[in-house]
Length: 90
Image (cartoon, rainbow, N blue to C red):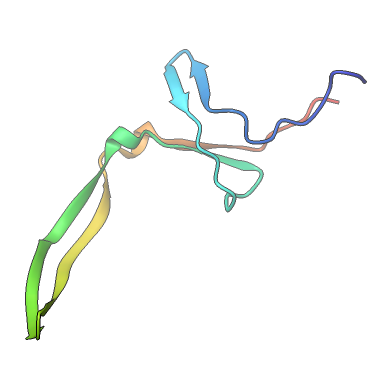
């Protein structure tokens, strides 16, 4: 039918009864799964805060390394989820 087509990479937000949800597409996600993440419920948790350790001086150059240990902390598991098992209208 005329006027029908395929949408590709066009959806940027979804408005629901619970507010507006930002949509970010990822080429590596399975086609039948849509993650719903509330990004405000994540933070970086440090075991060791970043610091610079001087290594050596050779001529006018100074060598150093940045050392840190961190992870992504999920503050409330119940605020996110996934959409799956989609059906297409025939």
